[in-house]
Image (cartoon, rainbow, N blue to C red; front, side, top):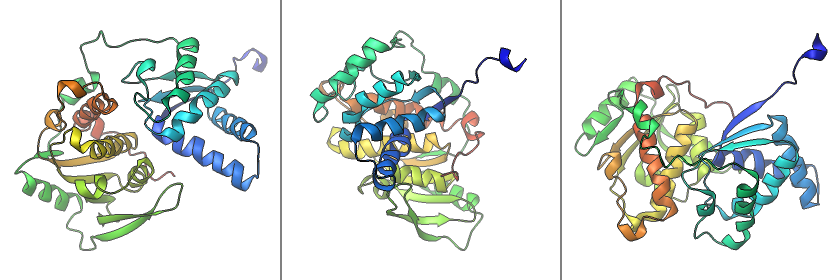
Length: 306
């Protein structure tokens, strides 16, 4: 009978950057500015309720804190989610005590670390010598990663995927939340393909919202002229990490031209190996490897839904 059925369980898997952008900050803005709720705690309760409606089992993929605005709200947010009955699972390249290391006002973030350690079971994967993204990546697809003097091959791939589109042009997108204008230097709207240089994407003040907007509008994205990077280029590295994460989250087919293979893209010396970006870039290398696999390229594009 209907009375004997177990309660329906809803689960959601979300990428942390996109979650904070669309499910938290966007909703907070709505409750404050549109619904005119003045009390900050009441705003957060409403945000928690709206998140729980999408599923009380929440998996955060690639949990990493780099933004001070996120860092200062997480303890209250997660406390609210747990008290509302959420079951939280998360993956991260760093143990809780190393999250937001060297971040601005980190002392105000430490209570969130205490909450994680107190309320969650920590399972370490460091003992495993296998990066499972690389296992998938062994089944390589051809023509998605070009190194050094292979630029002509990149050009050929672009012409093939845009089918010689004579309407190639620059265009402007409107970002998901803040409704800012985002410039795309070359695009085929008809074929859903965009092209950027590394400088376009990483030497301009862009962030997760910009990159997710690109991923929401184009199923295939070309990026050319990625240089070999060092700690002197740390802001560029941060943007490249965010960009690759965003493309991966949207299942975008990423076509890359770089000075080196992924394993040589970001070189650091021993004294800098504890930086957050070094750990995060290990994930970027793995993702670039996986994004060149047949398995990844068969995935359905998740854009066009915002």
